Image (cartoon, rainbow, N blue to C red; front, side, top):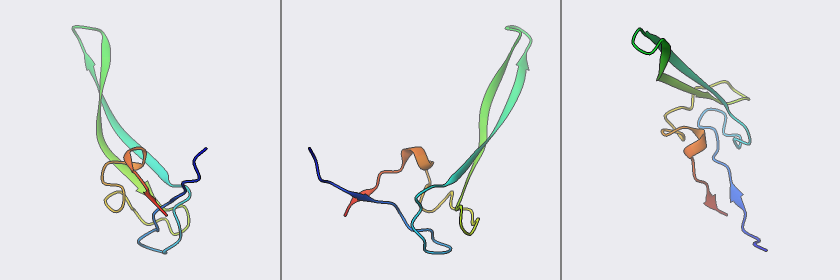
Length: 73
C-alpha cells in the first residue's frame, strides 16, 4: 500500500487549494448532409475556481483539468 499523497494546485486568484473546479466545454455541431449526422468540434474550454470564480483555464490547467498531474508532497 502506498502512502504517497498529492497536493492540488492553489488558485492563482484567491490562493485556496483547488479541491474542485468547474469546467465547461463549448462545442459547435454541424450537420453533415452525406451522413445525416451532426459532427462536433470542441471550440473552447473554460475552467473556473469554485470560490472566487476566476478563469483558471490557462494557469494551472492549460491542457484541461483532466490532464493535470499533481506533484507529490
